[in-house]
Length: 353
Image (cartoon, rainbow, N blue to C red; front, side, top):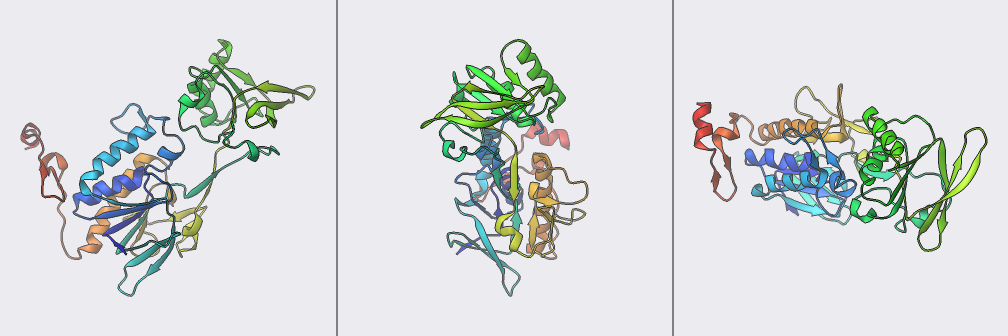
């Protein structure tokens, strides 16, 4: 039985930052994640994709953000149960919880924070009869390492931000990039649409609309895709390629969490955002993309805010009647569990005084 103060389900950016905020309050955390490594979507789906809305970082790669968060929270020595999915949750007579994974690992904690992002998710696949056969044989639904496509011929299908962004990014890496969309209009950001058009005009990207990939050609690996184009007269042709990447988004699912008695709305967990992001079950919180409330924005920075308030509420639950005085880390420094202390620079303290 693994025991901790706060059990965090989900080791993405929000869950990792919660470890840091809890550590400042001397609360110990343990994290469960179905993925084999921390980072959530940032590590599993788009580790090399730049993120632009993290305060203090004009641009940071998703995987670098994960590594920074791990570095930030490691002083508080969090525990990890990775490669296992939280399956059941049982409330005990004393109000604490036992969470059991699909592999039978049991965790005991008075506070549970669900930070599962979009929950479990699956790529939305195009209706191509032989696409399953070519998965991992030239068909990929996520781009984890752009270097895999260096000097390769790549066909991307889709009309949203991911399709546009990766077409732009791979234009300087792949030997040939072809973007195919079933409509002439795109759903992505206007500046990305304009950039794609510029790359097309300069000959760095092939753009085919309105059209769809309807079949894949190959033996043990993708050799070409069959494209059906509908303008005045429908026509069919092949494009030779090494990789076909359909980027049609993700289909999120809550998985076992949906059976835990939590109040669910539109595939997300309802929380009380006026107070502390607690769910309808006292002691269980939901933070990050997995929760919903009026005005909710699914942004990493919003998850950081929610994690901070959740930890403050958890402290009050675990220390009833004990008043916590908020201290800025620039003044108080950071106390580690090993007794060491990182002091704030004297110049900073003096300036604040």
